[in-house]
Picture (cartoon, rainbow, N blue to C red):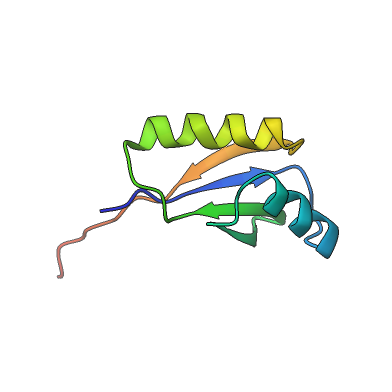
Length: 82
């Protein structure tokens, strides 16, 4: 399974200028979305160990001038049917 996570940005508006910055920062393999009222980069297509991928993505965002508030990781939830 390929790890998936969000880099939630300080930006609240998703516009063409932000999309260009995200692309130029090297996130052309990711999607720019809105999450919790903030712009977020949804990283889904990178292979490797989750912790290392997050470290690399945070460094990549920083190098590209993006301000990351936090990282969100989706977990699968399993429940027993009643």
